Every structure is written in C-alpha cells, then in structure tokens.
Image (tube, rainbow, N blue to C red):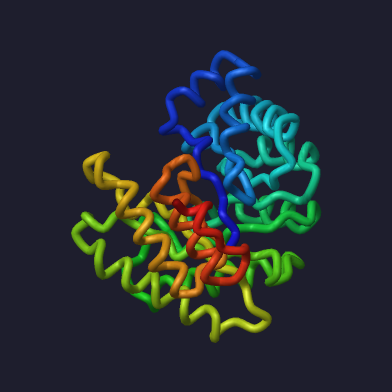
Length: 259
C-alpha cells in the first residue's frame, strides 16, 4: 500500500497562508510532520490558477525538507513543466480525466517524456455512478496513455470517490469498490489503483469525518487498493494505515507501535 499525504491542500488554511506569504520556515515545519507517508501530494489551487509560480516553490521547499516522493496535483500544464525537473525522482501526476480534451495530448506527452506516473480518473463533468461507466472512462484514458508510450506500470486508476451522504453516494461507493476489484482481473499488464479517501466524508460533522475515513480506508484496502491519499496527521488514519500494512506483511507489527 502506497500512502500519500493529502495534507498540503487548499482546505488547509495554515498551509495556504504559508504559500501566500512564501513562508519557507512555516511550510518546512509542516512538511516535517508528514513522516508517516510514502509520498506527499502538493496542491496549491483547485483550478490551476497561479500554480506556475506556487507549485514549483512548494515543491522546492518540500524537497529541501524531506526525501519523500512527490505527487503533483495541478490542472496547470506550465506549473507541471516547471515542477517536474525539480523532483529527485519522477513524480506522480494527479490527474487526467475525461473532461479536459484540449489539454490531454499535451499532458500525456509531458508524462511520457518525463518518466512520471499518472492518475487516470474515472470522471467527466461529474463522477459516473455505474461500474460500467467508470470502466469505460478508464479504458478510454488507458488507451490514450498507452498510445502516448506511457506503460501500464506508470498508471494509477482512480474510481472517483464521492461522499457517502450524497444522494447516490452509497451506490457510487459500492460501484467504486467493484471497479477496483474488476481492474485487477481486466487489465494486463496490470495497472495500480488509487483513491482520495477524504472525499468519502465531505459534508459530515468534523467529529465523525476521520473515523469514517479510517473505516473506508480499511474497506477499500480489502478490495485491493494500491495507493491512498489520506490525512496522515490524524490518529485514526495513522492506526488504520499501520494495521493494514501489518496485515499485508509490509511492516513488522509491534503492539507498542499501535498502543
């Protein structure tokens, strides 16, 4: 299981203030806390605005602070071009979907040339609810990526998780789980799967969100999920991550570590 810290996001007011003020010390101290992870997702905006300056600055500070791998979360091609060369190892690009046809070719070429990995997201204007619709979008994006000489081992399929409180949230989540399972048997050579775990609890009371996310992380892990974006600073999720990695024999279990 690849654990990706999603803490550097636009919902994190302290982080966004550090980016705005170019406060290297504050950002560095925050990054030091993200030690319980394999990779760090870097997001500076939702639509890519301003990312051509903000994203490479944040990536530079992150890489001065840690040796962790980087996931670049931006809709801005120029920002990605400015940031990829800074990475010590080829990053993961988050994401391509079925809703950006004017930029798909340029993004795919950038990923192909740089050796980066890529998240292919089962989404158009809105995330599809049926298993068939999810698989169709992933299949289309997979063919495009392969045509751009991006091999399957550098691809992560995202079934597009929505919050369980949404009108069709439960049906959507059930189909997302089936999507992960089916992809394991459907595609050869195999691709990895990935999910943004915090999406499941959007709109819930704060006291419930992390407990729901921890349970959902374990549930999706059981379906065969390969990578998860999570809040690695939350105790509920840290314990869930530790137990899942122990159950998968990826780490040595110790009662002292989980107590």
